[in-house]
Amino acid sequence: MNDPSMILMVGDLTYANQYLTTGGKGASCYSCQFLDAPIRETFQPRWDGWGRFMELLISRVPMMVIEGNHEIEPQAEGLTFQSYLTRYSVPSKDSGSNSNLYYSFNAGGIHFIMLGAYVDYNQTSK
Image (cartoon, rainbow, N blue to C red; front, side, top):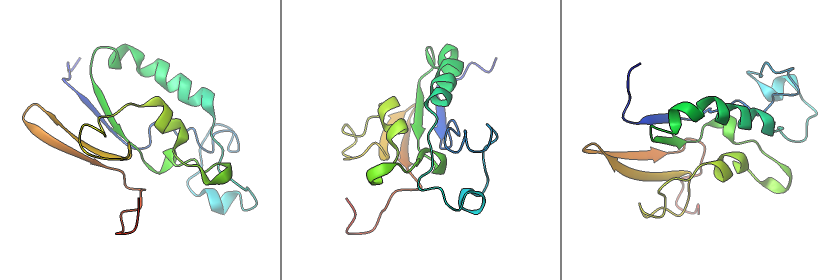
């Protein structure tokens, strides 16, 4: 009813991580509750369901996203953010960034800088 011009989703999009091991309820402290788990799981149907839920809105209103801690989803071989990175296209290259985890864009006279809070920013990082 607000008729938005744009949507900014700032992290924690679906809470698909930890979905199965907590009975679909999520966990506030994963390492506290699941000490022996080798990786945090990712539940792809949760991602897909959230996309279908948002489809009516985001099919007519642009949405810009940035990851949060629930998008990290550490997997085998040290891969992270895979569900997030494969589902969202952002103007990283257009803004001079080499990563979809940080980028910038202009909209309505505002220059937005999207910096993922869970990405390494030291001088030696990629």
